[in-house]
Image 1 (cartoon, rainbow, N blue to C red):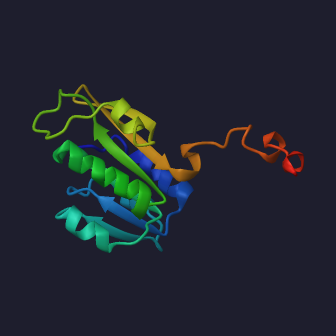
Image 2 (image 1 turned 45 degrees about the horizontal axis):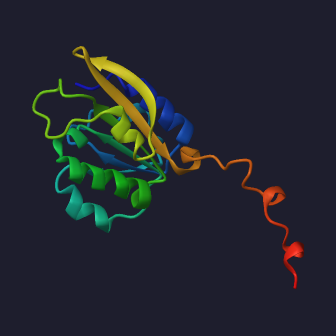
Amino acid sequence: MHRVHHKDLATLLEVARPRSVLLLDPTLESLPQSNVPASCQITRLSDDIFATLPELGLFDLGIIANTLEHLERKEAGVLLARLRDVHTRRFVALVPLGKAWDNHRSHWHTADLLGYGMTVMARYREADKPLHLYHYAIESYKTTPNWFNNQHWAHPERWRP
């Protein structure tokens, strides 16, 4: 079904060269197998994600597809936050957008995912409906502003009694 994203994921896998991947996709169609490095360990979760996830450690890359839209909105938000804060150095999420998608428990919009610190990596159309690939990496989440350096700090020598 969602194979339009394989080229972008293949490029990400080639550039990132992850040693470990956490795959959250019950269909297994999101991972372009030919681009996974041979030494990469893949851990797949499809059932009982919330019971299994706390037992897992840190992964270089997380891939989420065919998952968020089938969870209640609050559960999906908890999952995104846990991946972002605890279980992955970076992750991508393939998310159908809007209410045009049938049989989804939660419906997503770009602003929702930007609120989790994600950026739009690619935009696709499937069956004339929007499908976007979002990316999160702590190193690109927020750049350090220029004013946050010691040239702009208070001068401690001016505060002596």
